[in-house]
Image (cartoon, rainbow, N blue to C red; front, side):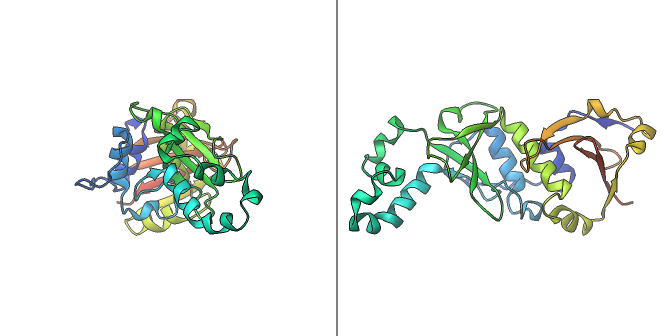
Length: 243
């Protein structure tokens, strides 16, 4: 048994059939090669139906601001003084080409599925980086209050995939993969890891987007087409391709 401990998000989704990258010029935005490669594998894949990652492609935060301004302009005209403290109103008074002097733009790559009040993105100044940090913004906060969520895009994507596979919020992965002859076994002990001489401490660790204290450890046996996913060092999920 050849266990791979240092497994990336890209390798994980390839294992589960997302191995045919979409071709062509799909997005007219500058983005890190890692993000584009992952997007091409994830595009139109049912595995991502309820994911916090936008497999359809990213777009910039400024576009949302412009849309909000267009929607609210008619209300502002009725009583401008009432909206003087509104950040969107304030941005509307600044020429679009000068917005960068007040706040950077962010390439948005996801949001909390089903709610949409939290958004994930990469700062425009980091788009040339190979593996840039990913930021998080809550719509209840100031437009400028983006904060670092993960130090790298690769860690963010790993967390996204682990959240999908764990089925913590949605059983999408189980529903999709069982149709392709994958089996799911949930255990509340690690006897199987010991039997197969898998070292828990050596498994790749990824954060969950569903909670600050939630994390995963993951490894795969590519030859046996088996994934071992541990959540919070308490629960083990084994996903295996049926013979």
